[in-house]
Length: 137
Length: 147
Image (cartoon, rainbow over the protein chains, first blue to last red):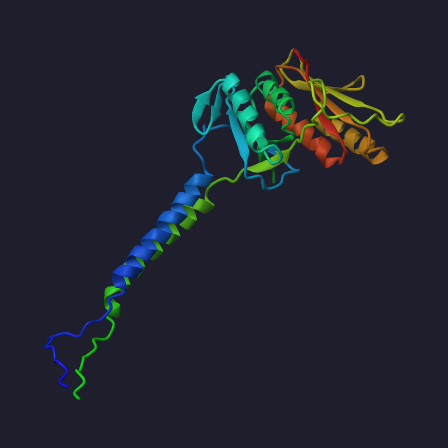
């Protein structure tokens, strides 16, 4: 049997450079995407400091940013107090046991803007509550 | 049988050098920018499922000897926050902290109730709550007017 001989000026080689290129690009993309997904868009606030802090391990949580003028933000969008209550009610219904609410408020915000949320949480059975703060040195 | 001879070209390492350069530059850039970001921490303030609002949870009766420690936060005429602890007013937070530490050592089971006036800044609320946590009180709760 005669095996056909193909004349090739160059041998067929597997070029891995573009492959690595794409893989690295994907790695960088996911690194950056995960970084920004953690740091959700939020308003700039001057957080208070505290000593008895811990890392927030809760996954299902509602982070409410409150500005000194009493405006509420969730996920970068301005919302009303009634919307927040609806969000707490929804979250408590879907994830009854592990739903948490976090207050991310400016240190100059009067308590009257925070109290309605403290009242709304136990109303819907949400007891996992906390304040976002900066760790004092 | 004649096996076709395939000359192999060695992997051109020089072509990967600029790519690796850029990849490392990007990695370093993102690592540095991520490390420069201020990380927020959590000050836990778990709420009781039962309180002034309606709840199906049955509240356990307090021990007969338990003393409720009421911390009433108000803002005085000068605009400073002062704390009334069971009738004694504290303007100096450090003095309040030392008193709370003594009380917690005597009876950490005594429930602490924070009654915060509507105009008290959030920073002072966190400060007092943090102090109560540092003193290791078993129960810290918020008082609120149910409307």
